[in-house]
Amino acid sequence: MQGLTPPRTESLSPPLSLSQPSSGDSVISSGSDGSVSVVLGQGGCGRVSIVFNKDQRQLMVEKEPHDNHLRPRCLQILQHEVQVLKELHHPNIISVIHASSECGRWCDSMTLEYGGVDIASTTTPSTAHIVDLHTTEDKKQVLIQIAEALKYLHRNNKVHRDIKPQNILIDGQKQVRVCDFGEVIHFGPDSYDMSPAGTPEYCSPDLYTQAGWSPSSDMWSFGCVMYRALTGKDLFPELANKTQFPMTLFLEDGEGIEAVDFDNEDELLGWIDFTAQSRISENIADPQAKTLLLNLLSIDPGRRPPAGYVCAHPWFKTHQSRLADILP
Ligand SMILES: Nc1ncnc2c1ncn2[C@@H]1O[C@H](COP(=O)(O)OP(=O)(O)OP(=O)(O)O)[C@@H](O)[C@H]1O
Ligand SMILES: [Mg+2]
Image (cartoon, rainbow, N blue to C red; front, side):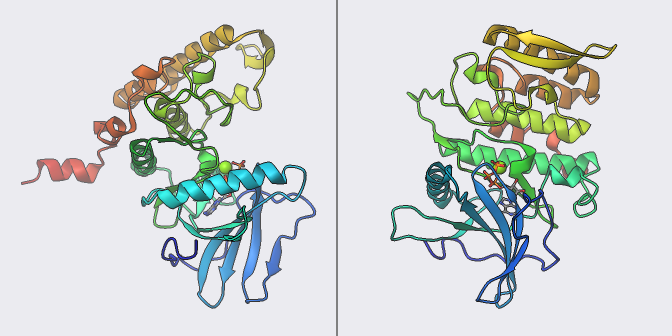
């Protein structure tokens, strides 16, 4: 799998610390080939490190599975991610440079192009200065690049299933790349998949309604990312780590925090629907953005606009493109 994608030369600024490595990890190490690697963090499936190759003067990212009882499952996910990424070639999707152990049954690590920082980190004080995403125009540029990646992915009959700020990377040129393709599934006319995946705060309610995964599920998650980009807040922070019923959510009722029990899917769906519609209506002032978000956050997947529609939506037109439309 060598040379799947021509190596991309990134700016050689010092690697950024994105998420904290767990204690006990070696944070910086040197390879025999003169490369230096820095552990970025431990994801659900393994360790992610930035590797700086001094000879090629290139930054890359290495993803390796956990070295514990989760290893067999993580190897499977890594293998799947490599296979999916090999088929995808789009400027807003991260590229694989190399996957090791080709002759063995499993690849046990993969090297990706360096995509910059994830957009969840751009709001933390330590990294906020690196990519300035404060203006609405900047936010639109990020969001439309995510929508372009989803348009391409969905046209290739794939559903990402874990669209969230931590899986969206942005570099110093404000080029956006979606990463973390380990949970991607194929989607076809007769597909019906209800396997658990995703991250509760960003995950569509399609498993609760029995609709199953579809490209529309990613559009719900895209809506959650758009809401966070515009307000700086998660739409459903209460859902963090909530996966099973009975479920207790800690809800703000104006006078304080109250623990509320949800016994089944229908009760939770009612809360999700009401909360999405009321928070969007209260916190999003721009009428075009509000309508788009209300549609993306529809419980009925059939009412959510597809990625192609989002890419062409007038709200994403920048000042420059509007000017270009009216100038002779
Ligand atoms: N190519 C890359 N360039 C820069 N940073 C990256 C790259 N790939 C991953 N990262 C960083 O590492 C983090 C974890 O990577 P990834 O999501 O692919 O792993 P994971 O094991 O699936 O993690 P999780 O379960 O936390 O989603 C990302 O959130 C991002 O901050
Ligand atoms: Mg991830």
